[in-house]
Length: 252
Image (cartoon, rainbow, N blue to C red; front, side, top):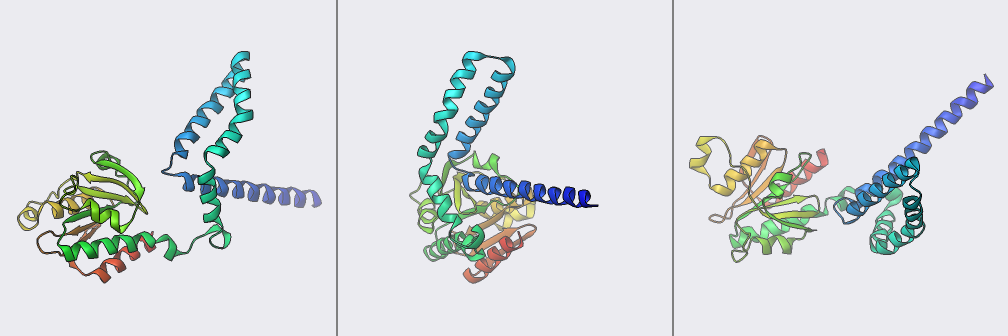
């Protein structure tokens, strides 16, 4: 009986150990997603596999070279990515247990709403797509790659008439602008073509082929439209827009 208890205790401890390590790796992957560190991580993985193969195949020269790399490589990585590490540690210490509040996570919604409000007043046409679970890589590649932090000022500048990419869609993933000037599929229903313009048809079209959320500001009327799932609200105010966006991400 005592032996069984010891085995069970060891099992629980090992399970917790694996869980903690998995959470740490997951948190690190979330932090580096969309940054240059992803490419470096791929390179390190390739070098690691090469090192294992060199040991199995007894390639002495290659083993010696790679061995020297691993001695100095770790220090070099820390030096190169000191800013990313500093940011990660700062994010970790923002709140208890490293978890930011829902309000902090949703700060990007305020930037989007702020930009839409300005564009509504100026009658500046806009089409904004918020990527959800379904990836939008095909449509991202049709536009100009941005991969920059989201801000109201950048959104407004993209959709200025003088901007060469103001006619296309901006695709956003959380607090990052992935691309601008993107070409989207148009709505398939024939009766929609008679009622709405190209921006609105594209906003509906992207919701037909994905779970993305689309926002349109009409250049003619300044009206705000929101498309998500099978719903397309063709005239909402700023407050309702913010409530709907928060509800969509809260549900996630």
